[in-house]
Length: 216
Image (cartoon, rainbow, N blue to C red; front, side, top):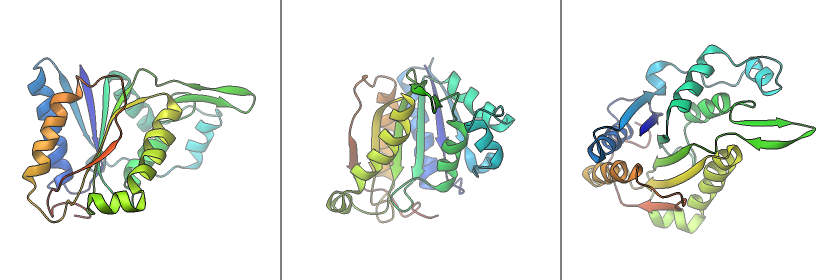
């Protein structure tokens, strides 16, 4: 089982990076034959801006550029795609959104033309989402943020391409408490990730982590 873990955070010492590493640790601990590729979008300098060249790809007027093809190949090799990111303004960072904008392109993630039915092409892909937020669970529930994120990301992005979101976690209160809470949760997620059933789980706000994340 091969898992691709994609991290969107500029600080390699952040809680986000630490959580991604613990998820990877759990995946390997579950079965030493499992493999993990950990991708740091910031460190690799991925260009997130959707350009005129990307629009030409969308319109099926040009092939995707080399950096996009490389990311698509990474996903094609994976059984599981795990996204680990801080919650910025109740969504994912622009870097990760731009990665999705450019990589999940027409002709690869889906097929769409004005005169044909949408074809979802990522039905084989299993997705696990891990968002790290500064607010508490009550705030997410009171304002409907968790459901809004699920509609936008789980359904709006991945269901559109046919990918299955098997787990969708929010690790909250990331600025006020001991990081060990979420580090333990991340390792547990890695342990269960490869054994996740085919039935998607709801976004579940869980308990606190530390001051290391949010914007650092």
